[in-house]
Amino acid sequence: AQRVTQPEKLLSVFKGAPVELKCNYSYSGSPELFWYVQYSRQRLQLLLRHISRESIKGFTADLNKGETSFHLKKPFAQEEDSAMYYCALRSTGANSKLTFGKGITLSVRP
Amino acid sequence: GAGVSQSPSNKVTEKGKDVELRCDPISGHTALYWYRQSLGQGLEFLIYFQGNSAPDKSGLPSDRFSAERTGGSVSTLTIQRTQQEDSAVYLCASSSYGQGSTEAFFGQGTRLTVV
Image 1 (cartoon, chains in turn yellow, brown):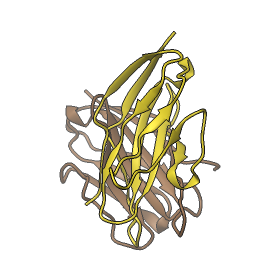
Image 2: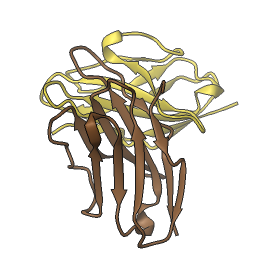
Image 3: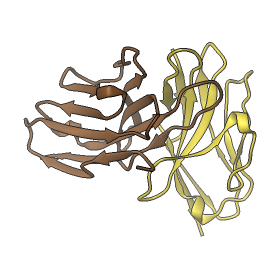
Image 4: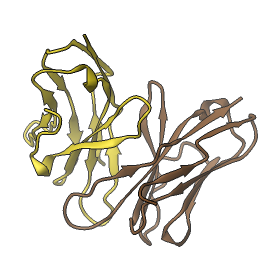
């Protein structure tokens, strides 16, 4: 069975502070990991995926297979980063279901 | 259309009534998901369709919930004898399937309120 755990529900930081949103997963194979974001009154959308190894809006996430983690990081938070963030895992194989964590609300204060 | 479309955007219904929520996925996407989003509960998986395979219904909370996908395209989520705890935003997403990473595209959701 696959599982995604986001241990915190809320993270509140001041503008300019570093941010780390935690994500741990459980899956026996080689998963694909994603971070999705939902800004206020907008639909859920992809932020980044682990295989791209890219930085989007200053955010990065590194897949650590040893710790089964995929934490999302940004060195200097901006107010516009305030949103709901979901970590997701997609299994590989014939039935590749996309499983989400419970999500975390990031609040960046001025 | 260019994206995933859901209808209606909002639905208010009386307790005990049946409701149908519709999802039009992106053309050509073989995978379709339904999720429920409620305050404090995050994103709850309901059901997953992939091509002609049997759907994964493991997330449906009770037998009052059912979904179908006709012709591999449009999907309908039906909730029978609605209860107040069914109030939530119901999200639909679709993605293509194949080798390599594929992105799931979400609809704007249907906000269901059971009174």
